[in-house]
Image (cartoon, rainbow, N blue to C red; front, side):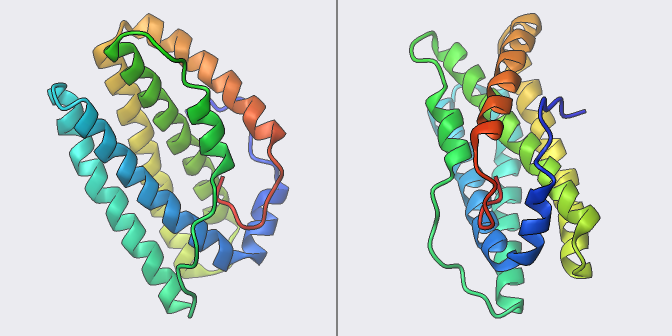
Length: 193
């Protein structure tokens, strides 16, 4: 369903399970950034009513996820800690083409957001399937479903504002680019992506 060209390195989930504090900290910041990204899209493209309608509840949901990750950190005696650079997201954002119309820029940003949600969904599925902590297992199952919905929202919005055939071509481009980014990134114990 997600269309990702390269699955996550199987070592990632094994490393993540052994470094759950680091993963939860990074995950919290990922949720905060997801909410912020949707707010940014709403503010920059406020004239696109469907976008505002669809993304406003996503902001609330992402922020609730942030709060829930914080609760999991607190429950385990961990603190939020410092934010880390997300090399994955930075590589995607730096690949957005410059120029083009406002709609073309919007579509590119929607597709990047869709990719991030798709990769997060895939990683949450791995955690749900393989983590031993029952509480986190249930949490990651819920988030996997939620991220899949967000992924679909972003793709549908892109097709709302641009010819679906053109969106599909751009999506294929982004899927190929994302697989190259994933292949080049080192498997890290303290990163969600």
